[in-house]
Length: 317
Image (tube, rainbow, N blue to C red):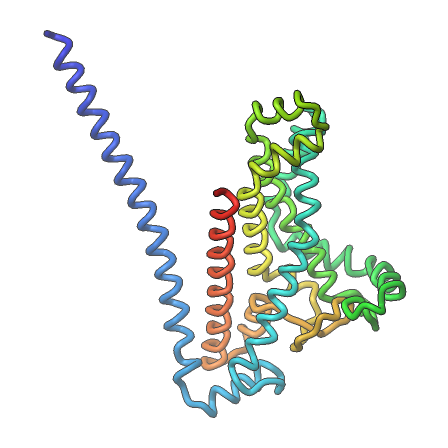
């Protein structure tokens, strides 16, 4: 009889702990939604004058910000959206296969000591600030990669993407995309590695027992298991590339056109780098226009994440 009060007290304590934990988890969820709503409301309110203010003042501000190359908001933000997606997409295209290969090497080919060392290095690289990558790109990569871009233009110049004249110094879209690829590579690799090493051991051993080679085992048992995680890791890297500011600002020679010529200078610019470059000298109308372009970038990022969730859900089904 004496044990029943103790059991009841323990059960009540467990219920209280469960209620507290539920309240904390709910509060955290509500907090992130409130933060997202606050950011959205801020962008909308600060960008509102860009669409409702005096048309002449708005046109003059757009002409000033674009250097006379655009007179409407769509004409101003269009090339920036194009440049943002082009540079981020190219960076993801360069980083993804390398990241997947490194993750597979760490998880399934490297000796234990080397795997541990590489995992530590990758995790450390993922925490390096973007300004460090920008300094490396501006001081090391830009002066030394011009020769390679020229070689690429000579041999593949018949493809419009690689046609010249090659920028010297190499402050071009190709160079910036390469720096961003190096920047997002550790993030994609780290997440992909953590997903792939969780593939069911039983399925791997079953594939090997049936005579599959190691690559066949990875292709049949590991990659299908990690497909949704690999997509999520890629979208995480893409999100960082879309919003990168300092590295782009320090390397890219900005332009204002819809150009796919990756090796030429002054062809494209990203939204984030444009805001950082134009903000110090912008007046109130100009600031509203820049915030409006930030709102466009916010929407693009939201759409990318939404599509990633849809693709991940289908891949995991």
